[in-house]
Image (cartoon, rainbow, N blue to C red):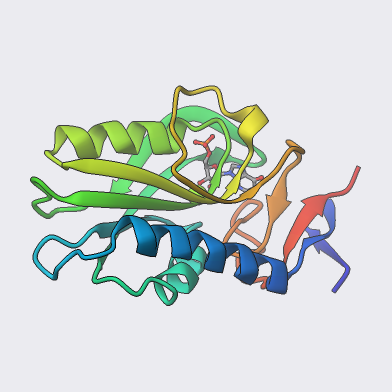
Length: 183
Ligand code: IMP
Ligand code: MG
């Protein structure tokens, strides 16, 4: 598909599956290196931010060859195509993370509010460290003082995208490629 229609908007092909997979594989190599030597007891916990990160987390996890746990949180901050400025926790972690290293994974880091808020919360809950990992990093849109430790794809364009977990009003998450809003 080179174009898709979702609700009232039209999107065109932007990043193809092969390029996404390649970028994820490079990112996973860095994680494997940074966490080399961890044991089952002290391994990192991947905390995936639902709904958007489901596909990304699943693919990057397959490339992580050090021991790791995988957990999920569910938050929401988006309505239509813009952030509403608040991060609402819909499903929490409900487990003890004291002294643990966390790798937070999300589909996209836009204003940075979601990752910034979650990182603060996890540190408050006693995490030893929190690394931020995004499939897409809209570096120019990020307004938070947030260190992005692993950015698979840096995007200079601030335009809205869908596919590979990313939605427009809940539609489009299942596409294997990423599409960008046509103007
Ligand atoms: P942030 O809190 O502004 O960094 O936004 C993060 C969340 O907003 C992501 O987890 C996405 O759910 C959503 N989001 C931001 N930009 C886009 C986009 O271009 N397409 C779809 N969802 C987006
Ligand atoms: Mg999301």
